Image (tube, rainbow, N blue to C red):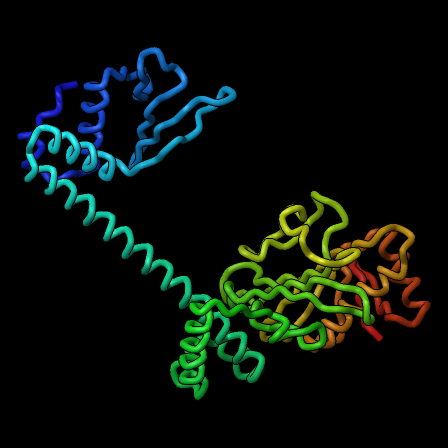
Length: 349
């Protein structure tokens, strides 16, 4: 590696490639030796190295057989700082100031990018809240807009949505918090996740006066698919299925074990031109605890009523679940109207 030539460097604006060469020359000048992977190590210090990546350089130390970052810098930021300090020591104040200026400019640009990202995130969150508030006040109109987004341009709700978004944006910036329980409940469940990938809900609700449950509703599939996951309660143990509200997919229940409930019920809703349907995929309660199972099924039936669904499918019901549902039928909790290919057709009473 050639020694660092400040006179030559001063004529060039730093790029990632140049920055890497500057840093390598600087490390060479300090006695660091590159290994076959391009890491620079100081002689006599086998547990310390400089590790180059595409955009950053990491100063690392070895702990317990693995390398951990002590500090991390972008290549250009690290190189401009090195050149500025070397130029200062060499008495070249003009070059030092120029490279400090490069560094300050890049830091300013990074700060602006971060600010724009935070602004976009705030605007997005405010837009979601605006949809939720509108869906609460105008459920049928908003559902139609979600089915046909092109209608929003001519909707009388457009201006209201914009005003709500600005209000929520200001409130969020001021630190105000919102709870989905402000907009929905078991008896008034959300429809928006059927069509919108980002409008997901999570709220806690007390059932029968003393039992707390977390209810989650998340979009399923591609945007506008007309499908959503509904999950009540929480898994009984780690490793059981759950809903990832970020993706709407099924995941390990350990990820959201902070939910409330003494069991869980999970199903999928679907809507198309023929109407709205639902399938119950899982009812999870401790064996022998029929009270919990009944309570969970009652919550499911209340949700079905809220969604306007009369008949639903018990999907691929095993013998134990079928016995449970038939016992509930005898107790007058539901009707089993038929069975086909392992699926039960059920109506809540």
